[in-house]
Image 1 (cartoon, helix red, strand yellow):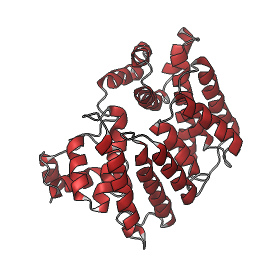
Image 2: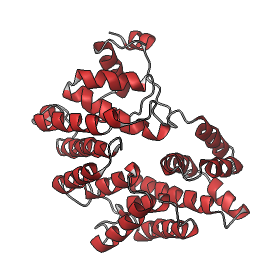
Image 3: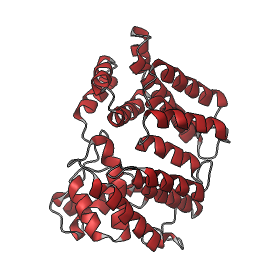
Image 4: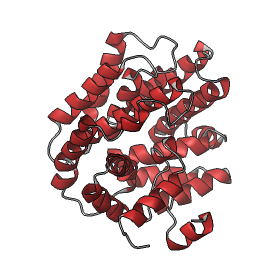
Length: 323
C-alpha cells in the first residue's frame, strides 16, 4: 500500500508536547525570546511533579538553542523556577555536545561539571523539587567512568525522598545502569524489576521493564551494526519472558489505575507499553492501548524498530481500529 493511502485513513500525531497546549504556547514564547510565558507556565504547574518535569524537559530542549533562560535570570536572578529550568537546559546542552562528538568520544569534564553545578544550585534554590535531581542523575552519565556509587546513591536518595514514584527519575537511573552506559543488562533489569515490585497498584513504574527491554535491544542493534535482521533480534520482543513482563505491567499498572485519560506526562510510558504489546503479538492488550492513545503518539520507541508512523498505522489496521 502506498504511503499516501496509509495516511488518508489515519495519521499519528507526534506532538512533541504530547497534547499540552499550555506548554506549546510557552514553547512559542521561547522562539521569540520571551521568558514571561515560561515563568507563568511553571508557576501555574505548582507541585504536580510529573507535569512539571515533563514541561521542564521539553522547554529545556528548545531553550538549549537560545538565551531565553539566561534572559529570565538576568531579570530575576533569584527565581527558583528559572534556576531549575537552567539546570535542565545545561543538561540538554551538554548532551547535545556529546551527541555532536559521537558515541564513545568523551567531552570536556569542565562541561559536565558546569551542568552538575547548575543542578546543585537549582536543588538548593527549590528544595522541594525533585526535578534538579533528575537532571543531575541524567548528566552523570556523561562522565566517562560515571560517578562514584556512593555519590549516585546520595543523589538517588535525594530524588526518591521528594518523589518516590517518579518515572523519569527511575528512568534516568535505569539508563545509567544500562550496558550502553555504566552498567549491565542484569543490573538494569534488576533495578527495573525491584522498582516495579514495590510500586503500588496503578503506579506506572512497572513499565520500566519495557523501557529496559528497549535499552537491551538498542545495545544489541548497535552490536549488530544496525541490522534489524541479525540473529537473535527477531525473538527479542516476543519470547516468553517479554510476554509475561508485558502482562504483568498491564495488570499492575493499566488495569489498576483510576484515571480515565492519558496525561501528557504519561504519553511516552503508554507508547512504550503499546509498542511492547504489538511487538509481542498480544493483540488483546495492544488493541486497548492503541484505542486509549487514539491519534496521540511518541516516536520512540517505534523509531528504534522502523518507521514509527508506518508501524502504528499497520497495527491499527491489523487490529481494526478506526481512524
